[in-house]
Image 1 (cartoon, helix red, strand yellow):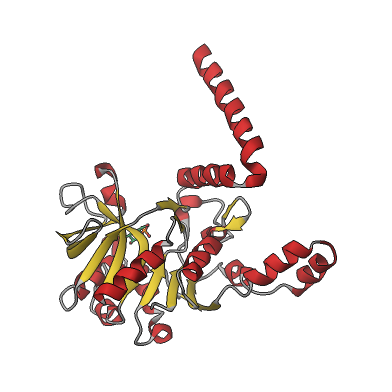
Image 2: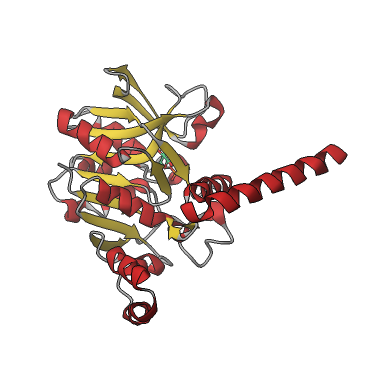
Length: 294
Ligand code: G1P
């Protein structure tokens, strides 16, 4: 059973400027809940008890979010009992620890900060700007596969050919409907050099041997120490598997995805579903009428 998780959340969020100039992209809310809270919830729902969040400069709001706020609690206790308990639950979701990445020099370097925390245990990695929506939490899906193979497992999803250059791409031999035994991992390849269109989707289970592999990995794409390259190194000594996720991935660091996620999640919320749906219909109708005129 995987009990520890690492959530890298140190990135600068340049794709979401100006919103991320003075606040972490992981705190961008989908309706009323910061992205990273969905990520922590997925970890907790997957049986994780202990979470290390890799932060950096300008990420203090993440620490405050999972901490207690006594002044607020006191106020809520008098007037809003339900929200008071929600805030108490939020600060007790898991054992959450923080460490700061000193320099933003790649995902591989960020993960390397976890080596003392995770010790000799396999651990999950959940990217802090990616929400997964699935019946069985994606980290749980990976954890189940780890229990079977005792090797690192990476979540992947199929992407269109013209988008393979935005992701880490894997290749390998199929051993079941959803699982490949990997022989290739390339960070952001061109279409011509991509071994498949299976993209690394931001969830991993890694064995502790990854740390030695990271030490032996030089900087790669964009002059950053890439986790994908370190996993390719790890492949020399261990098997690695990929699992095509059952579920949907939302990349919150991307503005269009962020908008789509907000709309989808709002339509699922009881208190918004009907009025928001009606609003969307009106907006679409008036947008259509306008474009018919032009
Ligand atoms: C990172 C990983 C990449 C993965 C992607 C998923 O890239 O390096 O392999 O496919 O996350 O979101 P980034 O988006 O940080 O450039």
